[in-house]
View 1 (cartoon, rainbow, N blue to C red):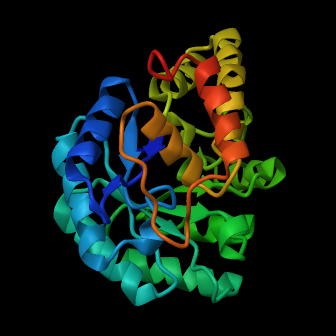
View 2: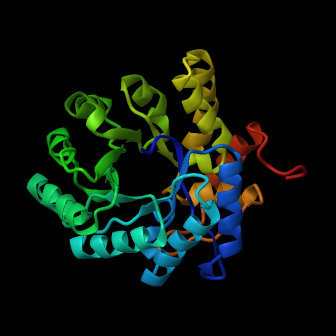
Length: 294
């Protein structure tokens, strides 16, 4: 249902407010460059510092701007199950195609608690759900056995796996087979995950090079492994630069340097250290992504 190169969109701000024009232009550019879907209000979209009204508005804009050209998978996760249900219901009513739900963070539920959380959201929303496992941010790991249990719930259709553990990804694929679409949540593991049977990626670096990420996935799917590897290695310096500091600080800095959005993040995020910003500029320049004269 959801596969290919899917971009975890940044949320542009200007003077403290959502920059709706820049957001629409970013979505339209992503789609024209060939991505297979977009995710508003994920980690990269600074969902943690969006107000409830802003969160809803970002999803509304994404659905309106996509106009059915690609699926919109709305970030609707929370460490409160009731809040996750509310956000997911709004995404469904707004016309999104599915929801991405991060594991509840900070309160560190048990595996049984994680299962109960996702089951409750699925039962109360009746909407396609993608699980999101990123232990480095949440402090909890959604284990393969729990994922296999969740794959038995009809509306649980996929998982964004960002543990960085390919052995864990392999076990999920082994246990779940075709019952669950497995997507990489880590730009560095997309190609190996595809080789294990994964179906794509929800990507940060595709904010900057959407055509390359989409091209890599399609090359692999078309059997052109040499081309897929070429695109993989071509993106890796830029991907490393996107994680010199906490995501989405570098990718928003890069998009601003490319002239796509104004640079603005919300506290407690802050601008990059000068030495890291210089390294990011070098990676952008090497890919020809900076405007002439920069």
